[in-house]
Length: 302
Ligand SMILES: C[S@@+](CC[C@H](N)C(=O)[O-])C[C@H]1O[C@@H](n2cnc3c(N)ncnc32)[C@H](O)[C@@H]1O
Image 1 (cartoon, helix red, strand yellow):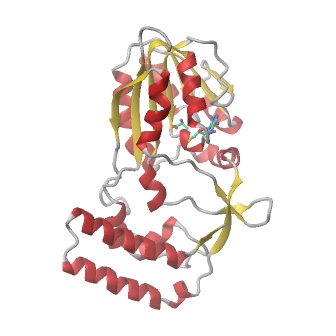
Image 2 (cartoon, protein in one colour):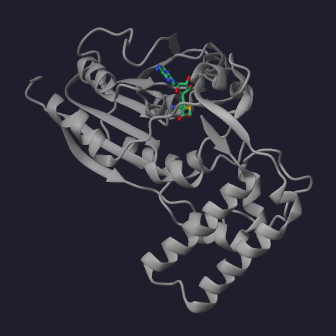
Image 3 (cartoon, rainbow, N blue to C red):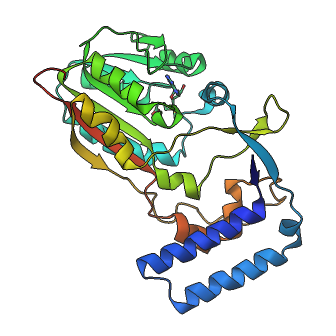
């Protein structure tokens, strides 16, 4: 069980801002005193003090449930993760030889479209039928298949490039999925991965959703990983690291909104507007995505 409290979240953001400022050497006396004063103010806001949180059960909602709801709106502008991830992934894709490509967990086909436009013979695979409906609308001539990442509907050595974007955080067993990527890639093939950054999970934790089967608000189980976990999964399969990048959230990403009214009834990212300076100090210019370019050993699979 996790208790998600609006006031608890805001105090956490103030604490993260203080710790980061001290660590990075820019938390001068005025900044530290402003944080302490703001903590007192937040504690004195009666609406916050009396705002009930929710007790949520992790793992009681699935990625399939989330994407079923999100699919029609997934490509709406304003997704900060895709905004920072896309140029980095595209730069890597631009450097790769054109051939047969797989967009694994393709979603609505964001990268499938780019691979297709680059001239690749591309297919897309995703576990969500609703996301695939959107993908097929955009690319009617491309093969899209409903399947799980650890059971790809492809023979061995089928493709030159695999892209897997912003999906591995949903996967409990990274090793099994990486082994599947190695299986379908030809020797010398390229694997481009993007994923939510571990740091992001602390600063913007997952939010509670509608009640799950036990009647409590549900939390999506996510698998945020340190960078060493990707290496531990990839290197024994014969992948070599060609590039790794951790794109950051832009500065001033919060905008200049005002404190929301009415107060959200549970922890919500909207609460960040209650402490804009602390939120910017804690979140701006911090890595929110990791992007990897691996290449499979060209001499065969070990
Ligand atoms: C955040 S979306 C990313 C979609 C697309 N790759 C992009 O970057 O725009 C995550 C996608 O991963 C898919 N997904 C999650 N777990 C999966 C699994 N085990 N097998 C296949 N697809 C999965 C979801 O259905 C969803 O479409």
